[in-house]
Length: 263
Image (cartoon, rainbow, N blue to C red; front, side, top):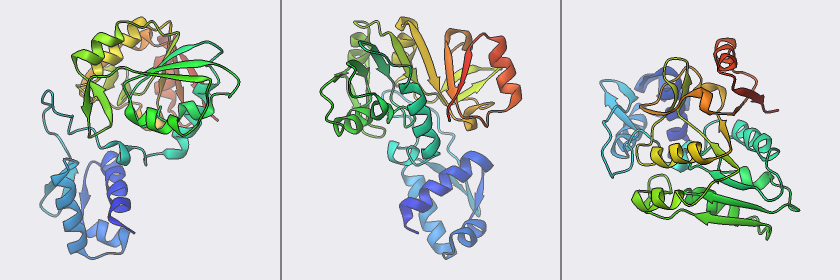
């Protein structure tokens, strides 16, 4: 197993367990303890975790502006989490896009594949600040799809644009539909996020879009991000996988938000 694969697995374990140990990782990956220590040192230097005596814990660094958020793993790492589920969420989301729609897509590893599932015979305009989405979609060679980039400052950590230019440009659009991801969904804090640089654009599009969809796999329920994004009642639909727990299902129902299960 290569370093990039171990890094992805370590991040998944930190997300689930909140801490990892050198001993358990060495055993799980069948490598030496020194290899794991070297991995953790490298990951700490990349701003992905904090080392402890004998292991590591998730990063808890405070946000600064305009630097990219250190609590948000690079897009190439995030895109490895629950990849099959993300494709199923995008497939379901695409089924709600119709001829002539103007659609906002946020910058996330969850929404990045959405354009792949648009039927080739319908015309759709996508508005986005996600360079990852533009790169992924450019491989489709579909002349019926138009892409509008909001511009702004390039965040090289997660391949997005942000800042005053991006936010000002977002004021020019009233999309039919907006498809966004988030860091957490909970009854306590509602819809939360982790990217301080992009949250204002997301809020603007939630306000301007006629219909708002959140794409979220089951791991984000009963979890809180650091930044408030929206009340649940401002979201029309939440697309998720069938593993979502009954408690979350019930409190979302009480908010009159539609829950859509992806196959």
